[in-house]
Structures are given as C-alpha cells and as structure tokens.
Image: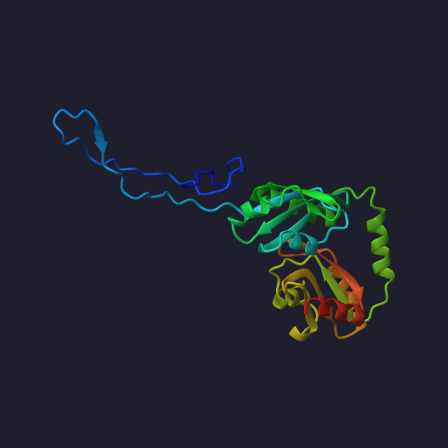
Length: 260
C-alpha cells in the first residue's frame, strides 16, 4: 500500500506523507486466447514512478502544557525523537501553555502526533500538525515581546525577575537558557564576541540522554565581565532570544553532572 497524503507547506497542513502521483502506462489490451472468449485482459502496468515534492517543515504545535514546563520536559515527552527547537508561546509576557516543537525529520511528525492527549505530569497535552509560517510568526512575536515591541501589562513576575537579576551578586559565571538545541560552543562564543572567552569556559548542559538541554554556563574572566555581559540578556542567537542569569560554580557543577 502507498500513502497518498498531501505533502506541501502551502496546503492545509493536516496530512503528512508524500504526494505520490502514480504514472501508469497502460500496457496493450487483448482478448483471451480461447475462441469466443469475452473477457478482456490488461497487461500489468510497469513499476510506479513518482513526482518528487519538497518535504514539509517538520513542526508540531503543543497545547495544554504545564506552566512550569521546560524544554527538557518537552524533549522527554517526545522521547526517541530528534528535537531541533522548542519555542514556548507567550502573550503579554505570560506563558500560554502552548509551544512549537521542530523535529529532525518530516516523518517524525507522525510519531509526535501519537503523543496527542498523553500526559505530561498531571496535564494531558494536545499535539497538532503545524506549518513553517506559524512557527516563524511565533518567533517574530516572541522577539518583539522581548524587545518591548508589544505591551508588557500584567507581568509582575517578569518585573520581579529582572529586579532579581540586577540585584544578584556576580561571581563571573552566567547561566544561559533558551539556547537552540543545535547551538555549539562556537555559537555561544560568537554571541559573547565582545568578551575574551575560550572553549573551556563554555559548558553546554546535557540531559539524561546526553542531548543538549537548551542551557549552558559561561565562565568569564572576572565578575565585572559577567555583569557587563548581562547587556546581552534576551538578545537573539539565531531565531531564539536567550535569557541570562548570574550563577555560581556550585550550580554550574550540579547542572553539568546531571548530564554525565
């Protein structure tokens, strides 16, 4: 059997699979050999050939996530799939309980949809097909919100968080959150290109499966540099805006050891 679903970004996005057009060259028709036979026999067609189509963008949308959900939670929810990016959706700086998850391959979308209405903690999560345009629009909204491009009313939690960052003591270590899972040490060093860093000063945190968790720690030369580097808080690395937090060696070592 051959799956004949839709396979484009521009269509309704509800079906996954190759749009496989069967090109059948009908063979010659002839009558049976028996005299007076009335049945018609059609020679079997040659092997199928297909019209190639570009694969769809492998992204799904999640709804009903716990409000303390992290990227690691999403990666564990889709255990066994290749997670490229997780984008949490906010409105007026508040998490809506929705997220977009970009997968490694188009075929993995079908496996992700099998998790629809399964539980994450005490909540069941809905999983839907999505499209590239919806994901990119969500990115644009998040970046605009982080830069103050949209109203920030009703966001006391964000305000108190900012105040805590400003009053925190600097030890020369920063924790980064929200990194693309594909980000490497070179990307982080480029993000902090105004500061002198070595590869040994960048520590990418791994989850229990040995995959990037979306967090990292950076050791600066001194506390003054780490404080100055906080000016990069909520700036973008690739398509993601990165949150920075003052940290300390014990927290860094604990996080790194969890992924070993």
